[in-house]
Image (cartoon, rainbow, N blue to C red; front, side, top):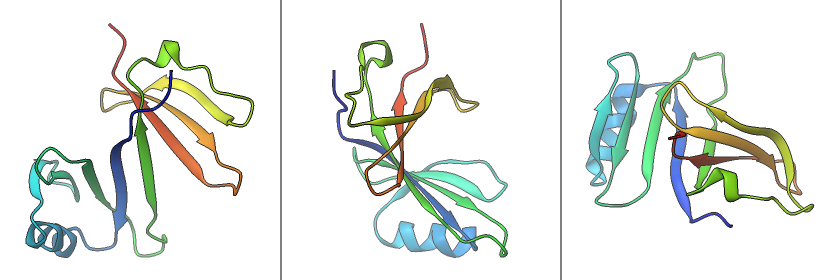
Length: 114
């Protein structure tokens, strides 16, 4: 079992309002907004873009989540360093974190159990 492409891009920002307007100007539509400086955008049937505001004293980061249809069928090769095994998230998915050869962390995202 392998990944099936990019599920989502998680983008941190210092200014939610400006970022929301920027992505909407590029054709993204807001799927969900939490009202507290975060939301989910999508351009057609493309990858989800999750934008979250972080404090000014924190460097904004970006995280890419790869889609995994069946987490129980995923058996990472020895070339893949598993940092955390699949765990349930508060937003309704299961996630695993792996590290690539250059030290970057990647999220593998799967549907919830059952």
